[in-house]
Amino acid sequence: MSNRPSRILVATSNRGKLRDFAALAEHHGFEVHPLPGFSAIPQVVEDEDTFADNACKKAIEYSRYAQNELVIADDSGLSVDALHGAPGVRSARYASDAGMDVAATSVDEANNALLLRELHGIPEAKRHAHFVSVIAAARNGTLCEKFEGTVDGKIASTPHGDRGFGYDPLFLLPDGRTIAELADYEKAQVSHRARAFEKLLNWLKSEH
Image 1 (cartoon, rainbow, N blue to C red):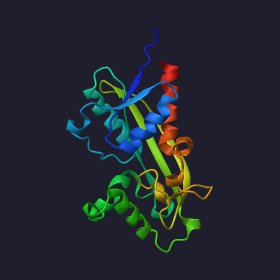
Image 2: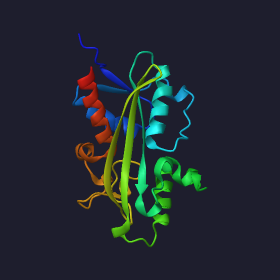
Image 3: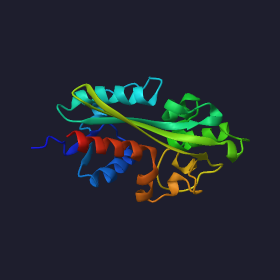
Image 4: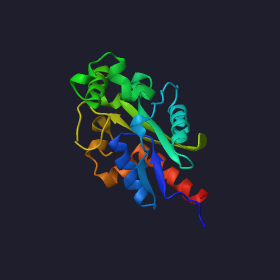
């Protein structure tokens, strides 16, 4: 009898991530669920220097709250060449770290506004950027494996599209559309998080 898990617990309250993961997992015969009681669990401080280290730290710690079940956690972000890799591991806290009032708007809007301000005057040809996602899987406080996905593009001068979240409205793909303009099935094929998660799913099928 196979011991392959039928469900994957995700240590996040981000509905966008859960939706993206669930759509991909369904095609491979897995179910995605948020880690039970996640909001009541002490939050792991993401203070590492790399996406991989943050993802592993979170997966290991959060997996202690789900006995014998596989828990995954990801750390994802945007790296812009013209900004020497910023916002990088601080992508989710980019605006708040800069002292902007994120309460006056949404966090995503504040982060995007700061990014555009930092890139003001830089032509599109020099706005190369990379979305990076590392997904770590752990069980009972022990790291099982980690997977990385990346996608290359550029930063648009204005946001476009009402799909997605985070920096999606500013991330231009080679076909001229932002990730926020893609249909769900298209995003599942090209996004950094989807690429990392696809590697995780293939590992689960091959290892279990």
